[in-house]
Length: 599
Image (cartoon, rainbow, N blue to C red; front, side, top):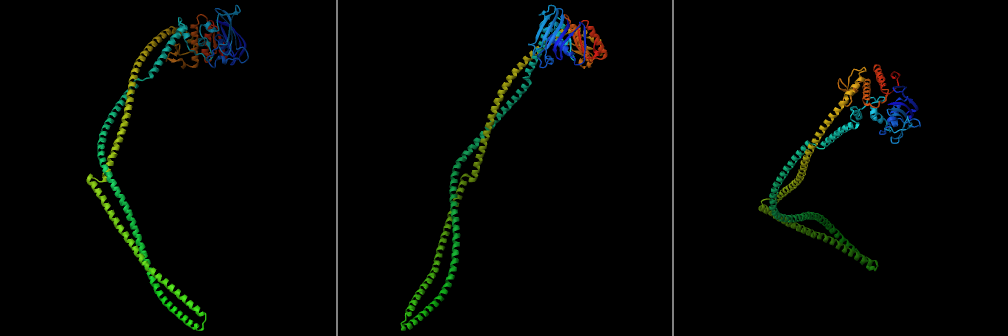
């Protein structure tokens, strides 16, 4: 298969460009930014189109910078003839435009469809990228099922894929089984069951202990209840006794209040009487003084009256002889004055009589005091009798019951309090018993669930282990089969790889494993441990080996997008020689930006 020419309408930075190719080596050396990689991507897109599955892909990256048809045409020749393919790239693969013309007839051709690359080369886009398309800095490639199938020869891609799918399914099923096994843990379940059985037994012992404590407590409550009933019969008489004592105490309190009141009245009466006696004494002394004074005043007054009367009489006689009116007036004045004196004397006599009556009032007060003192004596006598009656009641109670009322009350309250304590303890124990029984029932049910679950998990575990064992055996068988199949292409790839690799100036020997991975033979390390230049050589040689082994019907072209950038001068010269030798068998398009690497 050969590419004859291509015309780029618009692709990335390239637009309206016509490029022709010869049958062997095509070397293009241009500066950075010219569009060498863009040309390589265009050729690839003309055969395989664009993948729209990724968010940012070549379709987006190589959108043209000018308003023109995104795409172009390419002329190529195969064993089936000479053709020209046209592609116009749109927003997605479903809207892309494709057409093919047979240049021998200049008519549209149905020899190939828009799946052009796979139909011509017999490989998909991934295999194309992994072999004949040496993208810049993309030398390392993954080996897929299509490559393995082609290398084996009598197996298709689907056969190899079926083997891979089977192994992947086994792997996924193993993961599912392991995940399911993680959903239960037999040791944990056994441990949990054991812990709950111990808890169940502990609760059982607690229930038995509480029931025993309740039995003992019921006996104590029965004993104290009997004693309490005996005391209750006594308590009736005690209540009657207390009522009598209380009545006596009330009577005594009343009498004491009465006696206190009498004493207060006596004190008041004695003080009042003493005050009156003192006042009476003072009044008597004053009366005696007034009587004495009045006595003297009365004598003087009587003498004065007599003198005045005599003077008036004599004056009357004198003037009577002369028959003067003044005589009559003087007589009237004398008579009036005598009457006034008589009235005044009567008043004085009355005051003296009133002073004498105060002595009589003092005697009345003394009588009242005597009566109060008699009442006091009576009240004290009554109190004494009641106190004696109260004492007699207490003595009778002690003789009858062998204890005092206060001792009985203490004993009764003590028994009642202890009875309440026992009743509260009983209530607490009943609550504990109820709680323990509920918890015991709960744990018992949980133990049954755990036992059932453990049996199910044991059965499930046995089943899963059997399935896992079967999967492991199947996996081992398929891996052995895969290795046996891989062994059919490992040697050819190794030989062809060595033909290229050993021409270079390298010290490390590289071996190809069944997965077509390249390892350093000396220490079995991955080839990534090699230097950048050596690693590039390894990947280039691997690609050359795969191209020779894979493409047996239609020889492909090879695109080398500056793959030798990391090679030293010696190895670069060897690489050029290999490319020149390969160009006799394959059409090669070599792209570089450095004159030292061009042909």
